[in-house]
Length: 295
Image 1 (cartoon, helix red, strand yellow):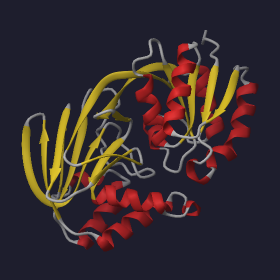
Image 2 (cartoon, helix red, strand yellow):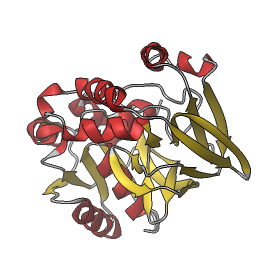
Image 3 (cartoon, helix red, strand yellow):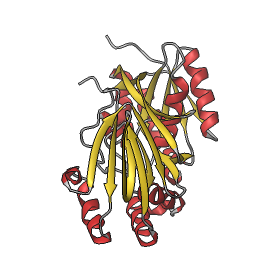
Image 4 (cartoon, helix red, strand yellow):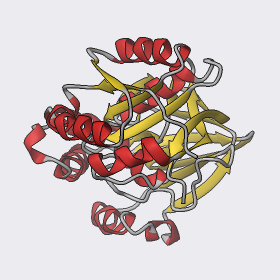
């Protein structure tokens, strides 16, 4: 019999322009229907959410995020050293790429059933210094597109990622990257470097189609020099994951990735800035248990 879990529901009221807050009533109603005891906390920052999550886990509750991927990654990192901690995740952001990867329903109320009947399974995290991420870390064209998307009007919804990519494309200046994966170094002129713990980013783009949440490694996807038209054609293939067959794209896998470039870049992960170049990214195997669908 599935244990009756006590839920600490952590809601980011600003996620996706208030989407999480709009979903809250339906989520709470579904929790009541399923007979799951819960309390709701509204977060006012990543740090606040992490503190709430650690307190809840220490009390034997399951911290559950109703938010975007950035909050999920931060809370996941905060729970890594809490004995017996289990994280629950509900889709409340614009992209919801982690729930997509994990097989959790994209409908928030349907996803509540995973809190009642799901199974705690270990997943990996990515780490960069003191920051953790649950999805994809990117630098170059991808991180510039992420920055622009974060500043775009919330009314664009998932189209914000397309908007960010097109704006970044118009302003892009080439760069030379150096990437070292488990000690093997390559240098190239090109567009971007991404290190993927999860396969999806940008609201459903299948960036790393062979990535797994439990393989103890990061899939490193690099995009070498090509024309702007070539990049647009390639972007159209990312949603299917077929871009990895293009000559400009390279995929490697490793536990540690070092990235530098010939000009400054901010590194983004799970939609938020996490550092600047040069940077070292690491896979953290089986870092945390997350409630995932039983099937």
